[in-house]
Length: 451
Image 1: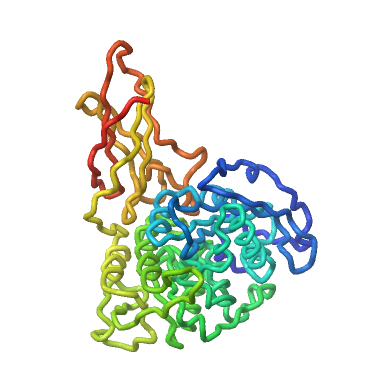
Image 2: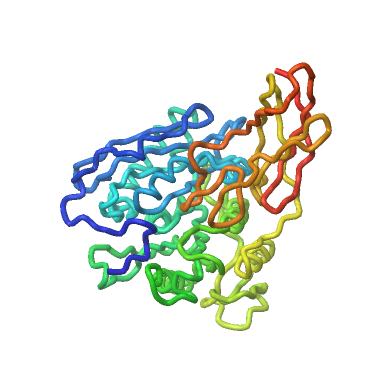
């Protein structure tokens, strides 16, 4: 049995998928969903063809947006741990920055897949998850006062089984998808004798117009040819070749540092999606998607480290990885070499910095290019602390919100808060807060105001 599509749990139930599908911890540990966050949850269905697992969907709506232009979906992978990680996907400040830039909402599903259950029952959208997803858009749109949510275009990001789901949604609904990033998982286009239970998808012509990126770790079959994830590259290569040979707008980005974990992929995924959304989203979410311009495209050998303008590519362009423009190609070049995608722009400054007693709180948006790593706290003009002292991310650059295996913040969510245990009670201190992004660039410092 090939097990490369899914990150943690690969065991399949031979029995009915309705067996043991009641909600179990840790799926009952939710961050709060108060505006601008909204949540709906659906119970598992026992009706054939409907989703056999419970699922909840959490959405973030950017403030001040009268009408949404699109929806960004951040889809976790398979197994209990990855499904649990989906609970915090909508709270990710970096992904929110991308959504805010394009007047999009940010949605994170969390499928309550029991550990020993068949992941295919949700990651193949034909097994009920596509219908549940579209149902949630109607219900969340009603809750949030944005009924247009049910009709706006989608930008899809998926990890492992989530990549299978995102790619499957492109093949089923190409007219709705602005772009899709497939990390370590792709849909199947041909029968696989090792996975006879998986029904292949067809490749409609409309899907060839959807920008796609196959992203995987080099240890998933590129440089490491054996082990648990060795089949990821052969599957991606097959999917890429099938789409690209017909003129599809598809690229490949090999992470030179990782296996199945997400690593630093967000520093390429977010600018890549940014370029695609800028080109394809209409002014109104009720209008059809625009065609992706191809005149400024760059091409590269899929597993190589060199990219050139399409007109200068020496080889068969229908075997080359497609990149939307020069800026994205430059980020791709840095990513495939060492994942150190550069950034020269400082992050946004904190806002609403306030102090109550010895407790300092603030708000801040993430740097769209490099996210948030930390905050520097000053008291009375002198350095006091860094919050957090060290971000936790075993897979890549340290982040303020920390990072889980499927590219989502840890729970409990890290607050923008600092308690000054050394404050002098009889003295009125002044504080300043500076944001620091993941390449070390700092914002302008912002002073405090007493509550």
